Image (tube, rainbow, N blue to C red; front, side, top):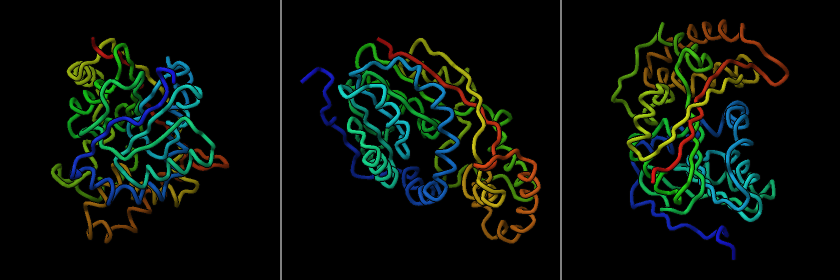
Length: 298
């Protein structure tokens, strides 16, 4: 057995979930499953742009935090070779099940998946690389979550996580939000949610400070711009926005008031998406992310 041969890590999920994890399981997961083709079809452009260039070596052990439907973990497994291994974790059991299915369908043998909350428990000192795509923005305690990711690394380990840049650079999320806010109130900050939200790490200075507090050094920010799929049709784009993202949060929390105004809201969103460029796959809008690289502090 080589030093990189995979052994099941010692993971502890604890006896109870947290309110944010419960929200993901009960509210978000069914919507993510329904719009899986939109999410994977769009978000993969941000990870595909950088995974081939990550300093991952054959034989490395890699941890993918917030692995979702498993596409990033499977792509990372292609970098490690058969001598390496990728462990994908997510707090949503349905996502983990989908990830296992995808790996089995693609006959990828050097990847495994587990249902775990990265903010509460990760292995210690077992990985050469830690990766996360659009998951760390939802940490309720970002320093603690990122510190767990750092502690999961071996000495000399590295990490990369991808987060959204500011709203203005991401009209695929912000444009529909602005439409909704002309009809409905801003959500209560104390309402149950899936975490701080997609733009919680958009500010480079603040995010750098969080990462330094978590024990990372040599922190580098790389900008990636990409078109993302927002729906196969105008109708699906409208339904997607009313289900997920900032617009979906506004609509959900407005309850009966939102339903009473649904027709006029959908009419305004129809005008918005009618003007969006499209091809045979669907409608595409601009998006922009930070790809953040760092090393574990000694």
